[in-house]
Image (cartoon, rainbow over all chains, first blue to last red; front, top):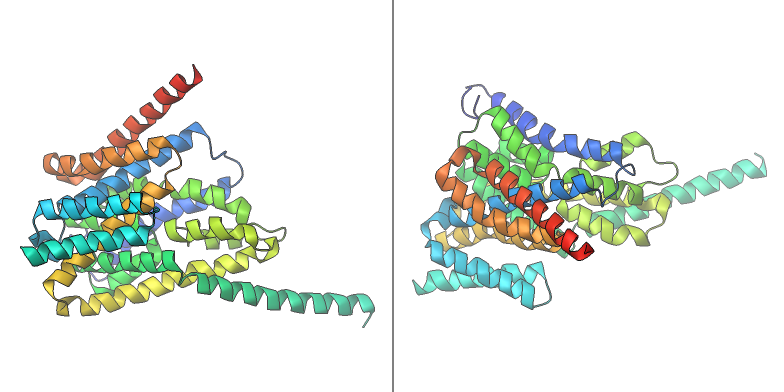
Length: 115
Length: 252
């Protein structure tokens, strides 16, 4: 039952609905249901947040170390360096996401130009 | 018509006009800096989805129905690694658990005295990092009975705008020079790296992030189909233990 295992036009949409839509909106609906009933500081919510954060961080790590498309053709050291420069710029220059993105992109393009 | 009835009808007209104004202000807020940054992250996502072999319609459908970029990137990751439907759904569900506490925090801010439960369920679909950050920041300055109108402008506009962005990028992706295409693929991870760091509520969130960044690629080499799940559970569990150890030390 993988994304490509059933050769019908509706299968990819059903896959997206069950593995994507249901798996996200279920949490949102539960959030409305519990809204005001659980405290933000509750211990279970700390664990929920750390697991979700680590999982999304794992996605970020994989997108940088094992990217797809044109980025896959660039040296891994350059990608890590560009991400580090972007993050350093974000931390040092007032925590602005826009600044970090621009710094990382410039570092990547400068590296590609020099290679 | 009695005076009272006239007063009510004038009142409800003013109410409707007020709602429209706040709705339009919400629409406009979608084009703020955070909104445009989200669009840039979706540019990278469209390239990723195309590379994974999805069609334009499937990608736009995903953008609108799932509407949480981390969840969509995890879903694409699952599709790429040939994960089965239950495994992909489990990974996406784990990546999206954080939506629940986010909605829990948003609902008391959003709710007016006359807001129906069903309208809140509808609006909750549009909760993701960007609209949540914007709403939590701005709802405080908006009259309580106008807040749902504002969010009904903001949330759906962000979704529609990004569905269009994804479609346009999907069509243009092949005609881009390689260096530009490579730069686009870096947009999504950089956007998440910084917005995730900035939205962490406690120190444990930063620990979880560092662990996840290292464990994700490590498990990708060892056990590709389960890399995200393992990194999430082990990294998140480790950060949770860190949270308790530091709290105990602080309590002493």
